[in-house]
Image (cartoon, rainbow, N blue to C red; front, top):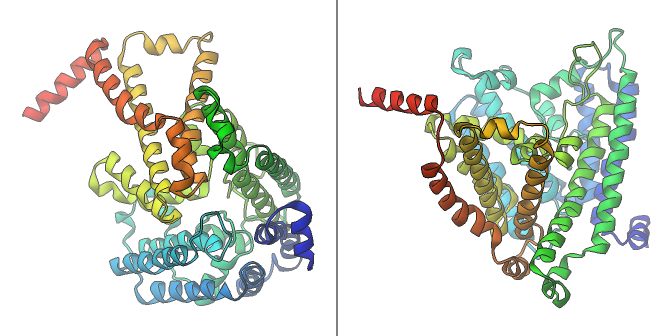
Length: 473
């Protein structure tokens, strides 16, 4: 039995999971190597270091399947060099990278979450699609670009070695974070170095802090796996509980299960900070900021009480990609709801074929729409905004919001976390499809009723009449 096998037996974790964890932890000594020997070297030398290390990490985790990563490097190079600035490049990127990923999902599909070459490849898919879109932006006239596009546009196309280094960089090739080529270039060029051209020591404490937070989340997740195992939701002991306790246990399981993602992102971010990739300029007091590749805002994630706080605090890199490279590029639809639907569908497809992924994002859409409609009602109803702004009301508002989003997300996550329909349909039935009923039947009806019966601010009514008169003219 090898070392990995012995560790697997001792920790009750799969060998694949241990290999991934060890590879993520390797980011710390690799960051030390880079900030000691390579930080001030020419870009090509740094790129070569990143490529060699990245290939080794892929091989350690995926064996000969590293060929898929190398194929994508070549694909990205051909698309950005031969189709630069054309609509065809966007289509080619999605057909090649997303199509390649979906083929991998189909070929390796099982009843559980398995760590295969598709695990790191899903990260590479978004990175290279984003790269092609940024190169496309760089080939357009500046006046045709939106402000967010100008920040990431690539005017000088990258070469093969740089593309390989960008995709195989050890701080982001396996589990993220997502970052743009412009961010990667600023890191390689040494924009994060201090006034003396040295790696700043201010990175040490933030790096250690994220590492320790990640370890804490990992322990909590492992404890949760033993305490609330997935098969329990299809057991008689679960079904014999009352409705309230079934939903409550599902919500607690959801939080503990999500902690594995929190752990990996935090540990990876700590290594990214140590390497310098996490540098994000200076704050107003002149101190270094190290939140440049943050995927989890811990305080907001743990204490947020509306759906906006969830989107803004969790999986930030992927959400930023979806916002800038998908949602905002659908402005031409002139319909926020349609743009939102397409963006969430895109993310569901990126996750895979399982029905639960689409239902999860469907409920997310329903939750966000309900929240926005509620906020609009509060804003237009006399006295409501003033009432909930009172200090005495704030704790109750927070508690209501926290319970609402926690229980709603817990229900929705059943269809994501248990993967196969045959595993989640029973627990969802035991909860009487409560999430679908609330957000797609009860709330829409209640919203229509409230629009009719609640009073409105006189000014709001006048604004609406004025708008209608302008439309008639």
